[in-house]
Length: 69
View 1 (cartoon, one colour):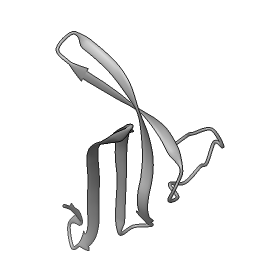
View 2: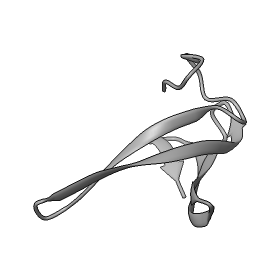
View 3: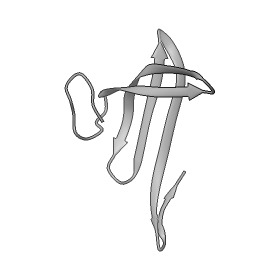
């Protein structure tokens, strides 16, 4: 995780650059973390003026590892 302030851990408000690819086309997006709960949840949004996408994941410990939803 890195951003203008080079944070080492995801924190709400931190920004990072996402890298995307579809076939031969590559592009980057600016993302902002909107939820950061260590070992429980992580969410961020991609904006270009208006929100383009919101991503979120929750993490639940299981006997065999971690369930990611």
